[in-house]
Length: 182
Image 1 (tube, rainbow, N blue to C red):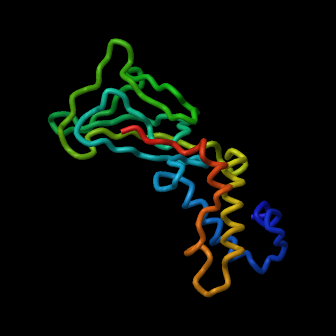
Image 2 (spheres, rainbow, N blue to C red):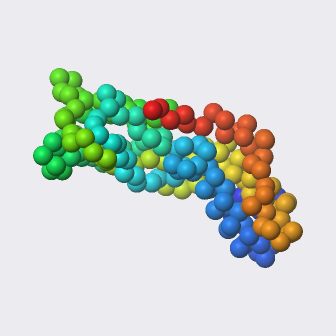
């Protein structure tokens, strides 16, 4: 929170509760599956489910993907199976454009039962374990949003409920917005 205080020139500890709320709102706005960036900012473990069958290419959501924990699926008999790591290849680990998984050379995806969540991929995503690992432009955009919420509080409704994400902050994060591949 100190970087927020420096940005908006607020040095009092009286605002810690408000800053905590504003920081949480900024993180929720930017981070994860529901954030506008469609990416993981700090290291997070995820399970991704795919309905019915394996697609030709598994485009891992929430870049940057740090690692694939495993791939499991429901076979045609209804039993859960786990793919051996040697049966697939992962490309784009750590890439801002996202990782993708393909069958290993000479292999193909197994047949699954046609049902919801028939394929499950566990993975770890994020830039690192702390905010210091997140790209500076994303951090600066978050600080700008916190500052905007701070400037527009005081009418009893709570600044975070009516403050638009600053235009300058949008420019900073534009290159980090991940477009999901369907």
